[in-house]
Amino acid sequence: MEVEFLGGAREVGRSAVLVDDALLLDYGLLTADPPQYPLRDPEPDAAIVSHGHLDHVGAVPALLKGDRRPSVHWTPPTAALARTLARDTLKLHGNSPLCPFSEEHVARLGEVEERHAYREPFVVEAGGTAYEVTLFNAGHIPGSAHVLLDDGETSLLYTGDFHTDDQRLVAGTTARPDADAVICESTYADVTHEDRRAVEDRWAERVKTTIWEGGTVVAPAFAIGRTQELMLVADANDLTPYVDGMGVEVTRLVRRYPEFLRDPEALRRAKGAARFVTGRDGQRERIAGDNELILTTSGMLSGGPVHSYLPAIRGSPTNAVTLTGYQVEGTPGRELQDHGRLAINGTVRPVSARVESFDFSAHADRSGLEQFLEPYRGARVLVNHGDRCEAFAEDLRADGFDASAPELGERIEV
Image 1 (spheres, rainbow, N blue to C red):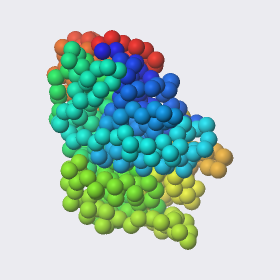
Image 2 (cartoon, rainbow, N blue to C red; image 1 turned 180 degrees about the vertical axis):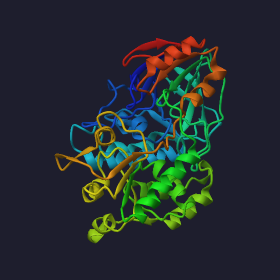
Image 3 (tube, rainbow, N blue to C red; image 1 turned 120 degrees about the vertical axis):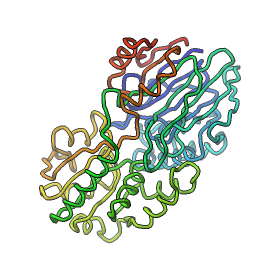
Image 4 (tube, one colour; image 1 turned 180 degrees about the horizontal axis):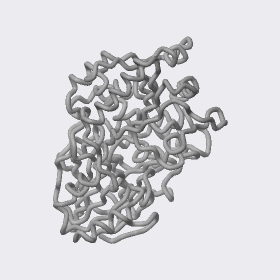
């Protein structure tokens, strides 16, 4: 089995791994200005998508250009989320060089997709090889999956993004299927997560204190997973948030798949307690001045309704911005996190509002990664999807693993 890393190698974003020149694992984009796509435009016979985040699924409709019709395999939530993300990308970049697909390509997904449950093996034909494929719960977001491939000679586990600890929205992964080789994400390989309950308590206290002092809290959040997680945390702490942006649609969407949620009833209650923003008649301007908690996209401040709120609250230290997700290099969120400034309408301005980061990560940390990999000491481990892939691979080698960190474009026989 030969794997080629078209994206996501020694970086976070645009994940794409081509197996035997015929079977594609993920096909995402890197959220930046401008967006970055995988190194080249492959023509696989089939694609398997681990989960519904832009950096893993964002470019999938482009696989259906011309007369190409590869089969696309994913879980039901991932199928629905992929369409939501594609429509958003078209809204932002459609009919421009920044978007490699059209609405027609998104519509074609219905012709080629196959939806699968966890732990139910299926066969994918690609390049003349019949691969047995099994998806396992990855504990990252609803529908996220580890992908196990077996061509009859070699078994390969592609972890996708995963978490070993329970979140309020989804349960952590417990799957450790046998595999000869593992392609393992490493986003938080150099981090030890703070206890999740302590993070929740600190965040809730910051929100309550800010509102009590007369301020407004803007909590930029990824629409998929993080917004729903924060809604659950808010409800558990008697907070009533406004929810704005794509997270509104995604919340309704994931509730259609209760079997992929840890506690569907808790999410129903949290949705009932939240107030969804329509944006009509100056609603956002009023909310920004009303000492409220606002959960809004985008999580990295690269667009979306968050840009309606930040100009209104940035000037007062009584207000707060709580960053609740990973901020990729080159994004406005990283600029705000590192330097306390933000480009608003083309002008870089200082932000006087309190800016705090809270580790609500849906990824395994260093100990979680090591715990996950422990059963694979006899396997080959290929580290990807991280800022410090080489360093983590070196540490794994020092601990007795056969580990390496492939480069972008590298082809490896496993």
